[in-house]
Image (cartoon, rainbow, N blue to C red):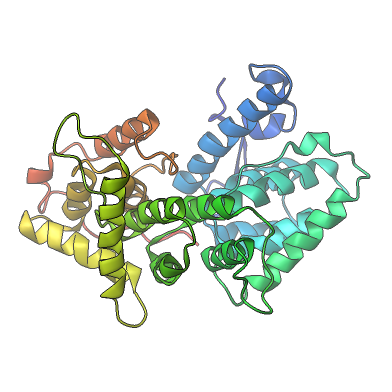
Length: 360
């Protein structure tokens, strides 16, 4: 369908130009996608979220630039919609004021894009914004939630906000804190969608407060993802299953690991240490260390490793973080590794180890 082909690009192709893809131009018209009714709308949103979002992360301006450009008032209508739909993939709180303002726009299409993008930024599935009438009070309610998020994000990260929302959902609400009204598992799913190594401390604090064993299993996978640790015990017998005994043993390892942490847990420092360790053991540079972790064959850590490799020029990828064993993730890993054509053994000194400047 050519959804990744930019049809409209800002006249200046320098830093800060905002590409507009045909999927963005067509939004919210879902007639270009297969399916019927809600399924067709879902197909449209899935394409935009997967393809347009990762393309913006790969080649577009960073979140701070996008927020500044939007708030500068010089963007075209299509550029505004592109920012609202694609920038959500950064999951960056600096974008929240953009969505709050857009949800009060007189332009219905802009409001629709803002509602979809805000849910994606938070790590949630988006509703069908086309089903909401232009004069519905739901728009005012959504704008109020976005403004409350702006205020909450001044004191808490998005993951901390979801942690508080989970605790509220299981009747352990922290006093005096604004939270999102969601089901417990919904909160944990959203955390997995947006968590990074910087959020490890919040996850470690949450661990002893989890109220159900399935919740422990789920957060265990998220901790593995952002810490590059492996806790899940693999059954040695081909017929040995993945029964509760294996998950319970794995969760006890997390108990021990969390119990050994003293004070604040610096997830970013922990991950840097693991990368240096992998690089040193194989006499590789930093890129080689990341690729060694990517090639270790443990799917839960792939999103964190691959996102780090974007700083070295690798393409941003779309991941199924809820199901690490999804074949889609295998294809994404292959695409990332193909960007670095040399074998890991030859990477020492062959690939520049200085990441490009991060987008802002």
